[in-house]
Image 1 (tube, rainbow, N blue to C red):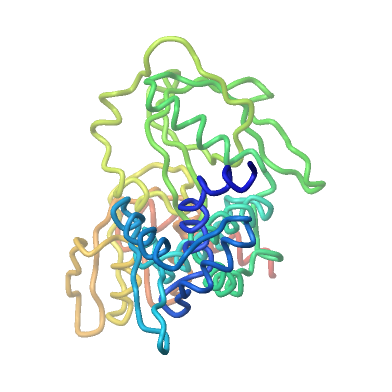
Image 2 (cartoon, one colour):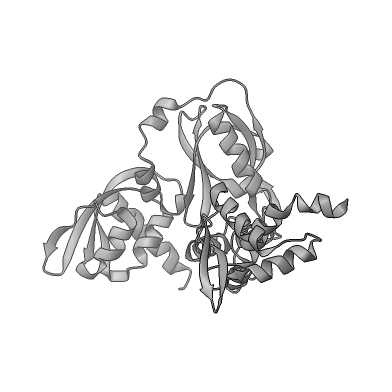
Length: 329
């Protein structure tokens, strides 16, 4: 009875065996498949296995055949993800600060299951999660799902927002009161996840770090701020808010040495206009949130970059530099 029952699962066992044990570099022979089936208490003949390979092809599995010495070997060709693509995804997961160490390892194990067992070992050799900078908020994985559901369902949300103190304890912003906003988009910038939402009380779009949100709940009624979101250029928004820090967005004219064209294009995009100033310098006029993050980015170029206009932004930059310099007097 058990043999008869297992016999009905023959194709499923073969499909799983091919997915796990075979790849282009490691085809499996009919003899190996018969041996594997026997371990599952399933009897099989060579001819029936050939028929099974054709049935799996008709079902949609990319079963490929090659010569292995005097025998024929089989492997799964197209799995949906190729090994280089899976390596790319593993690298993205392990380097993402917004995913905790535990969740990173869990996601990587799931990605490994999309490859053969031998390829999965190669993927695992690329894992360097432990010791990397990671968020301490385990709930971010579920926060993203909650927020996406609210966006898809056209619902506002409420949540609590926090920072960390030096004892690594949560300190609630807003005196612990709940924020009430209308979520419109999720953004990944500077290795962090952000929610872009409309604050009806302030009458403007704002962004929030998803890993610092807690106790997310759906609100009543449809979302507000559709017109404000419709006017927003998402790419421009992330380019103007350095590190996603808030600040008054205004046009700023900057001067750079010619050798810094690459970093400028990396930051502001290929559409930015580089206007020659002299043989060694060019200028750009960009909209940026003038804040300490912007000053920090510009300071990284030392004397090779400076603010030309407006004068108020240049004065703020000078004040910032004097304040920092005073710490080392």
